[in-house]
Length: 82
Length: 414
Image 1 (cartoon, each protein chain N blue to C red):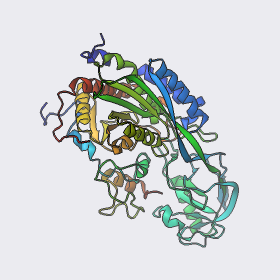
Image 2: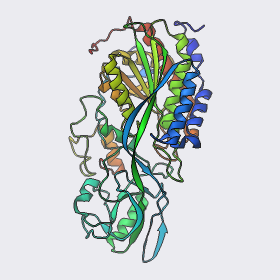
Image 3: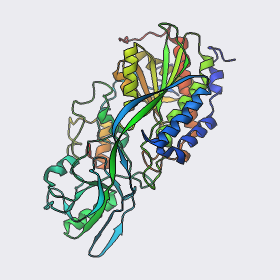
Image 4: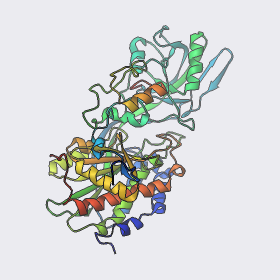
């Protein structure tokens, strides 16, 4: 299958991207991701500090949350570990 | 025919009805939400062991200690009011006990104040939405407790967490956004009181994994390990948390694959199942198992299913350890059975195996009513169950038949 052909199944990109899930070691964002704060991160992309800290810190540039987790944290008004 | 070449024949055996029945059993009242160390967890374990034994598997269990599992031991009665009236809050919806709360079995009555602003002595301090719990603790000496905002799901339930920060010195209640807003307004106006208890104890318990060996691998041959956690956060007094999507669905998928695969894999391909306990308190069952596997010098390919309730677009996949080849096989399987896959976080047991150096993937395909009374069997989509079971069966089959031909473009190193 050509890379330009949308796949009915499987990964649309490189399967190895699943080894570099950004920010999945963070604890902020949706509750489903909260347990990630006490689990080892998926890869090296997660920040060293697993928490954004406060609602104010979550939108800040270079905060530790992954993009999805950070977006969830901002939308829901949550900080990390709260 | 169930030979190794007959993947289509294996996929035809996948039964959504059988998986739906498994979920109904695990989510039923006698299982009580399957909290680690609970009678409901033991009931689920006994039933699951029977299911695996019926597959002619070699079944055994493995205990491990789990410390400080939070448990609400009494439905709290929480009321609050102003000069113009009062109300009793609905447990689970308007109010819940924060996992970092101290245990306070008797009711505390205090006037309302704002954390970081008002004198804490004798007050229930409402924490502004923009303030974290750690910041709120800075000036709380003598406070009755803290009140924290907590979002609710689409059905208005707050979620329950077992894993979380260590308990602090104060009772901590979580309020839904509407109640929190009203309480903040009352506290700002210097008008209001709250009375309530936080009956939350922490028990040291025993977690128990279930292990089943269905096929022995040849020496040095591929050995597939299918895992899913069977524990849940557990019921509260008067409040059921069935844990249907999380993770009766994952268990149902693994059981279904375990029923179908043994007769359809080539000689030399190993197959085992681990149904894990204590995921909800920090993936402790998988941590225990991964340590054992390392000590034994094992090298399984691990597939973890955490949530197969409702596929929304693509199933989320997270890899760990030397999983390039396994991901390539999963990709092939996804194309074969028509299940789209997307890289994303699956913060679950797969991380323990990947962290221990094993090729591991976690698959997530949706949860309804996360950790709330809304996580019921009727929210589970049978088509999603069938799709994820077919994905797992195809992955196992392709791993067996393609392993000799699959080379990693990057190279998995152990």
